[in-house]
Image (cartoon, rainbow, N blue to C red; front, side):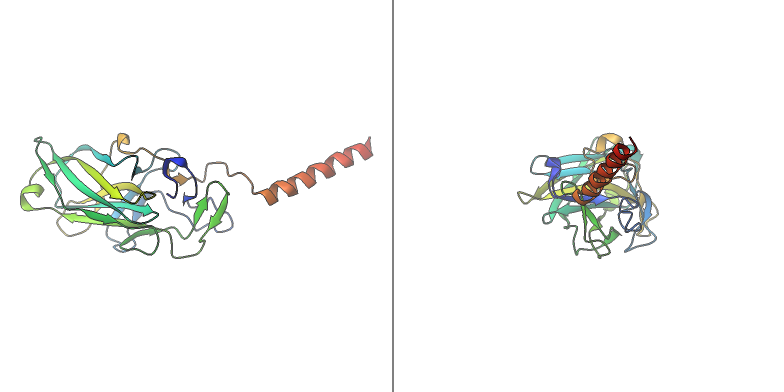
Length: 233
């Protein structure tokens, strides 16, 4: 989130990675919205590409539906690092027509709303330290659009997002949910894996390298074992 494809600075980690704070981190899979518990969102697994990262290097990307759908509204789930990013969605209909919507803001992952999920911690992937643990940040947010009657009458095959933001801003899009009932609540829209270009979540199944202090303790332990062996010999 901080460094984009440079993979520096802070990013998300999955629940279970921080054993000292096991409830911190983001939940993957199907999650209920924090701001709207009747809406649900799908966060991709942590061990593969799980976000569409948009920034100065990649200013456009597409959320490709597995099959065309008719919806009355949709809600993009995502957040930005190093300031807010903005996206202009273009709807691509099954009949090959398109519709360009207004620009919307995907807020910075700190202190913004509406909230889909609060991670209560983030990880510095270079220093291998946890930050902001037990805080009300960082946050995954939602950005919602209501369609016109004409747009809602057509099947949507994909949504292209054209991005704008600061020189060091990175916007991570986790997915999109649709309103299938017209009641103002959202359910996940299955996307093709081609929609995602980056892995921004450190997973519970991934190896976390011990911090320098841990390595020092390991070194002392190894030295003690070696001395004990020499004494036995």
